[in-house]
View 1: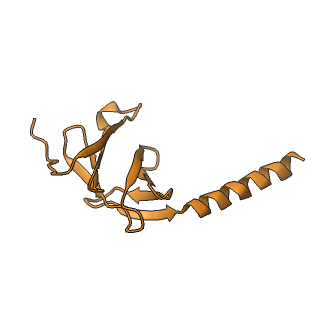
View 2: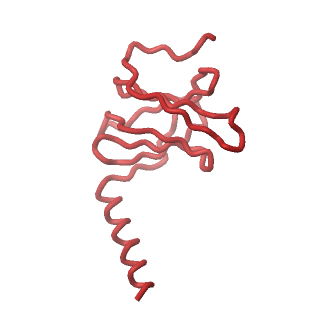
View 3: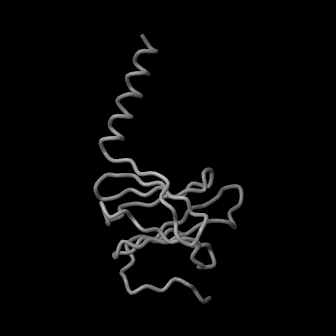
Length: 117
């Protein structure tokens, strides 16, 4: 099998994302030491390349959602990035900082508490 992915960088993680309804369209998520990450099909063909934002070049974790068709990326600084992977280079759709996540969680908890009383 001839894979398209070639890199001089050390591979940090390789993760599979399985679609329970259609296992043949699974994805392979590859995270490299040089901050490059890739979404591959099961044949090894690169579907999309992910570049983290300059604010944090270290990717801690990647996850793919078949429901949304998006990649969720956890950065070393605690931010979460959401990417569209419809093209060769993934497009960052949004980024949430640690402070934004904390504020949203607090607001959500306050609403839940108010409805319970």
